[in-house]
Image (cartoon, rainbow, N blue to C red; front, side):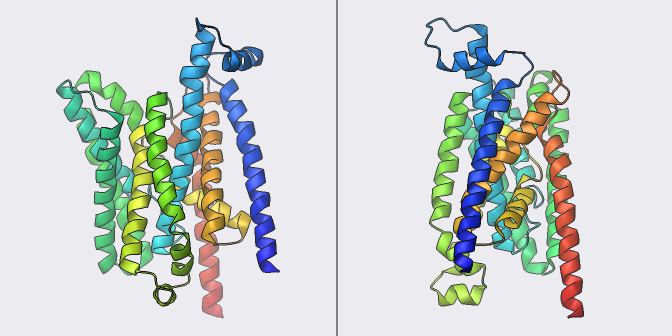
Length: 346
């Protein structure tokens, strides 16, 4: 009976998220610094005119890649957060909080400064590789600290400190970069989906698709692992191999997002928590697709706010995600505190 209820709730959440996602796709397509009538927007989508107009170029080369990248990278960041929360068995763990995004930001910034100073064109693949190295390095530091810090609260603080150190080094590097490089680095380091082209979206899509495919193969081990290491071992799960795969997949997803959109805060924590509240289930075959859709919805909504609230001035995406995500994290921490007190009294 419970399985039927969980399944119905899952399909209801899935349908609801798809419906909201469709609305946000249209809103993001219609919104922008340039006012384009809705009729012109839809005609630009389906027009076969050999000579594209200015409106067609705006829709096809700016708005469409942006909204698809917000959906794709938002979903990837949410799934990365879910994987890290599974690994650490803590809902407050996430790529931004643990310093993974900041580590990726640091290596990408240093790589960009090095290449731009020498007139070398940094490819999208190079950015993802640099981001992955930084994300993996930060993750290794957190894992090393986890061997000594058994208290999860101290581990989270350690991750936050790593993030601050990486951000400080990044700011120093950006400050002393050439003037021509500072504008590009500053815009990217604040977090934004603007400027992403179709070729960038294609490369990001390949990495996200491969990582998501790898995550699908881990559904059964994740389901066993969330019930405890001993239970997972009894089910034939190789814990060491499973952990390595989980860390690599989470790092690839977080690095891909950082490489193309810069560091984006709170999505990896807030969205999985919201999805758990909606599903009332921890089953990975329910959580993974809804987390991806939830991340896409959350980032599309925040990007729409960032573009529309003070148009034509645009806010950074991290500012808006923090505005909506931070209260969710605070609520999560308070609810966990109440649960701990209740369990202590019991």
